[in-house]
Length: 305
Image (tube, rainbow, N blue to C red; front, side):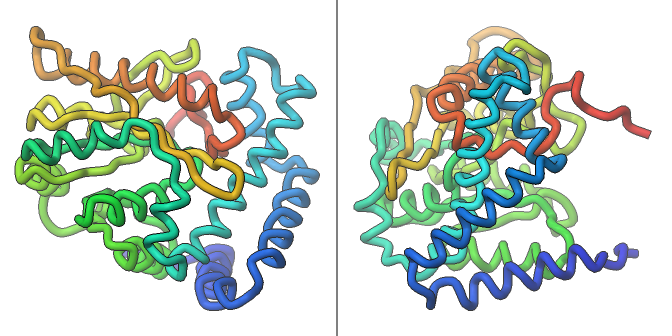
């Protein structure tokens, strides 16, 4: 039986519904100021999410959470985080040609050259910038859809709203859990057909991820991107979205090669460690756009009951 949604869950879902219904019809300058102000209010309260963001940014910077530079960076980070949600509400109404024109891409040819050869592509992304906008760019630039996997949000109405939003942009969305059929098998099928699969990849939600070294400490990353590359021969490309003024940036890094020797498990572990290194570079270049407000490293995690 599904747990009954809490009042907070229902309020959040209602707020998102109102955001999609109202924000696109208001002046963008007005709503931008409102979202910045909301981010600043939350930042000043120094609640758990802000403190966790600062602890994570301290890892990235190799310093302590009480470093004044980390505190200033966390304010930029909260504004970036709220900008993501502001853009989520407005993105369905932005013309696709405008999305493509305002997205500054480095390495995009790495995607298209593989697709032209009929080879599937796994795009692995950290939670930086606006990954939904990056997806809208890819659909607009390539003229074809791609497949992604979504966390099962609570309440169910919230999950359905987010899925409808992404499907409205042209994505195929599969549930991480609770769906019909074999999600991994479907992803592998799409890749063998020479298509694109895009997966968030620096935070493991299953407790079955691959342990890697990330900014000098151990964490787990979801095995999916590496396992799909090993299993199907698809090209694994790190994709690193970030904000660039009022526009968007997207860096597509060099393909992560699958080792020629070793077991499938060993190959997957090696690939995921290389992916962690690529993410370190992208996050270090744009730390203010890394939206990691949760515990990530193993020595930060609370023991499981």
